View 1 (cartoon, rainbow, N blue to C red):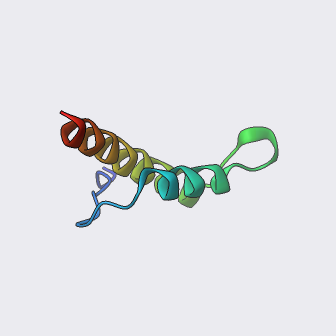
View 2 (cartoon, rainbow, N blue to C red):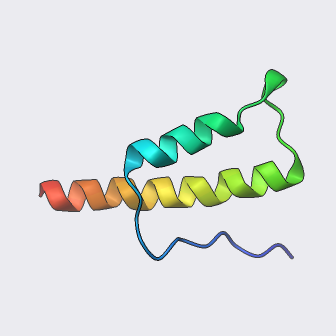
Length: 58
């Protein structure tokens, strides 16, 4: 059973996470298994950053 993605202890700026997600894209949109795992980790980090932005705005 795969290990669930972990959230980094310190949130990075949303723009930095977005840039790293874009950097994973390859021709045809296919990722290696390692790239797919990193993509999933980044999505978790991205969601946490979005929640942080919303909480700060409130």
